[in-house]
Length: 440
Ligand SMILES: Cc1cc2nc3c(=O)[nH]c(=O)nc-3n(C[C@H](O)[C@H](O)[C@H](O)COP(=O)(O)OP(=O)(O)OC[C@H]3O[C@@H](n4cnc5c(N)ncnc54)[C@H](O)[C@@H]3O)c2cc1C
Image 1 (cartoon, rainbow, N blue to C red):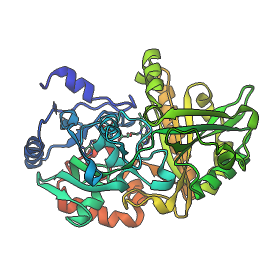
Image 2: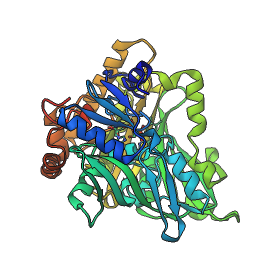
Image 3: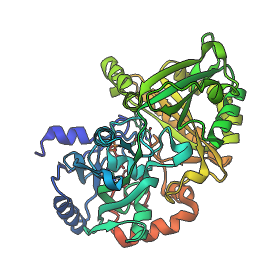
């Protein structure tokens, strides 16, 4: 079970930047096994990290000199349609979740774009999706969690039971407990959706439309991208979705008539909801086939006040260190409404209108200097964003010091530190983020 191959595989992640050797990789088959392993590690003060699908970009799912728990076997998914809930093992993927819920006409209100990540991995970081502008985080829709704390205690927590632990685990970066099982609320799923791709020649009309869309409820799902334009510069694209139940709606004018995009290039397409949810599967297959999936990914996520995004992002994209993005990368600009983001450990700028900027770079293979430059460019962007009220999305390729983290969590730091002291006093859990001095 614990072959060398497993140790080599757990020494990496999707980022392919940080490499650290665990003592061992273990594949627990039950909550009791996780509990036993964590209690053992706590007694011996050894690091433990849960690994879902290893999509982290910078060592966050590694355990240098400790145990990586591959959660893949804890993947049971059970839907209770009458209660509109789903209980999912932490190692199940969001693809497993969607398969089970769509079969009974239901769906979680928010899903990550990429369905290959694990339930535990996404809940520990919060989870943004295309419906986040209306419904907040994936983690905002949890009813209950079963967890194992850093001392090996197995607890069920919710808003009513052990609420301090519940708050510390949701988007809490795996610092206080490992997730075994999550109970999620579900809502009725549409049968079909109409997808609009709306292109803008410049950022002005793009951000004006994103603002309008984030404030009203005309679309259930919205995302956006900056894309390299032919001949230089950048174009902007809004991808927005409205549901319907089989009959084609004649509502295009109502939905997009007042928006400022280029009418000649707009794309309108009807899809089944399942096709829409699986929209990234094809991209993944393509990236795997070309080898890009296995290259270094120095990704950066920043939550920005919307006006800062509009003022700073277009300029930043023209700077020399961002030029690689034109050929090998994706720039996402996701509109968010701050009032919908509830998990307290998800730090965000003040204000209602926000933007999640995701700079998804791919580095060439065997080019460590380029990777170092890209990580340095991440640091520079982060510092600039921080100076104008921006906040890091922790799933980023960026070395953060304990001081950086303290400033990142701001007023939530005291609650997190208190929960850490109570539930993981020896700081054995999820050290890859480097939150606590001396524990990495
Ligand atoms: C192609 C791609 C698309 C993405 N799209 C989105 C998106 O749309 N929205 C979004 O929010 N994110 C997105 N992400 C980020 C991704 O969802 C997060 O990195 C997520 O944490 C990865 O899940 P994983 O199962 O691979 O976790 P891993 O990489 O295995 O782990 C990530 C972190 O979660 C912790 N963790 C894992 N399981 C548990 C557990 N059971 N209990 C406690 N902690 C645990 C790990 O220790 C680690 O710190 C994307 C990433 C990629 C590569």
